[in-house]
Amino acid sequence: MIPPVFILVRPQMGENIGAAARAMLNFGLERMRIVDPRDGWPNSRAVAMASGAGRVLDQAGVFADVKAAVADCDFVFATTARGRELVKEVVTPERAMEMTRAMAGQGKRVGVLLGPERTGLENEDIILANAIVTVPVNPEFPSLNLAQCALLLGYEWRRQEGTAAPSVMVLGRTEFATRLEIEKLADHFEDRLNAAGFFHPETKAANMKANLRNMWGRLGLTRAEVQTFHGMLRQIAWKLKRQADEP
Amino acid sequence: MIPPVFILVRPQMGENIGAAARAMLNFGLERMRIVDPRDGWPNSRAVAMASGAGRVLDQAGVFADVKAAVADCDFVFATTARGRELVKEVVTPERAMEMTRAMAGQGKRVGVLLGPERTGLENEDIILANAIVTVPVNPEFPSLNLAQCALLLGYEWRRQEGTAAPSVMVLGRTEFATRLEIEKLADHFEDRLNAAGFFHPETKAANMKANLRNMWGRLGLTRAEVQTFHGMLRQIAWKLKRQADEP
Image 1 (cartoon, each protein chain N blue to C red):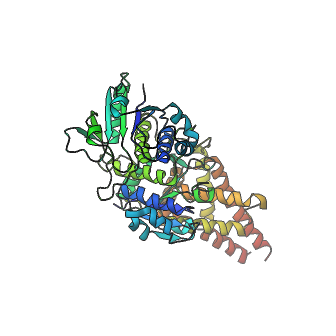
Image 2: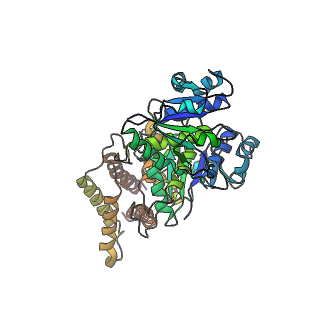
Image 3: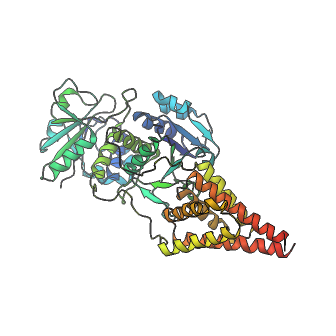
């Protein structure tokens, strides 16, 4: 069972990175990734705050962008209270960790995105996730910080250790596409549609592309289906090209 | 149903008192008591840290000792990782909040003792409690602070509120495609792919088509996404047709 990897996206204060490492290690989670930390890496304030959890930081991978950080993940959660404008499943930490345990039990790699302190995750980050996890806090006083989010998710991971296997998601031996494979499919479609002049008017192009990428990320495509989609695009292009060559 | 009162015993740093207030209010808990705070009361650092949760501090009762603070409680939990030398039930936060809900439902008052930052509760405090609550942290790295303890207990209180509530929350006002719309999309793709010679060899065609239809049915596409897929196919076809016409 592969424990989830917590991915800190553009974290600002080193102290908070260290505090997140401590929070994780409380519940036995050691796999951290860091995307584009504001103050560079390594960060002495992070190390000082992490104290006995320093090995979480030592082992942490640092990535230039979210896309690279989630490339080998089979399933990605985005931790956010927002993102309602995107069509995406929103689950509680409890449900998210149930799903994570079910997938991890099948050898799948699950990533959890945690946003920067002030602003949280951007839509372009959330698009790369399969589902959103939102802590059901008091709507009149939502004030969880980065380490507290990590703490609650780690707590749920650990709490469910003892409980009977959850009856969620019959995935069978289906192989789902990795995030990298999904990315490449989205790229293939985007290139082909760009060439076909699909993204017009120009002012709406960015939004259209974002919606499409969000959709690809959400659908839960299998590896075979991704290959099928690539094949469809190639075949249609080939056929119409041949028609053009033989008028 | 009377929510539990969180009793901070001899807290040291004002910041931690404020942070505990914030943690509590995240989960709708507003009843705090403070026993013999090191730096007196009121405490401006506590107020500054509590920020929007200032009303938790404003309403907090201050007591000279634990005995006075728990005097009106029907049941008291002591939050500690130690205290095993005392014969006392030790429960998880999950179980503690189950018990609290059961008692609160009968009009009983439940108090939760949270110890000072460095040393935790003393045996003489724990003796005043009915049971011990211990967060099941990694034995090799137990590092929960005061506010994090309050956060996890508050989270459990809130989590159990809506056991019946669905864990999958909302998808906003997303309109999902009807089965008929999905059927028509599958038809459109199948026609286009047929024309492009995608379904070969002949012996596998039926199976390929069945797999594709199964996929469309499974994906949970929105109405807008179905329109986008139709648009993609039309646009690619139109573009390549035009290329053919203008060699």
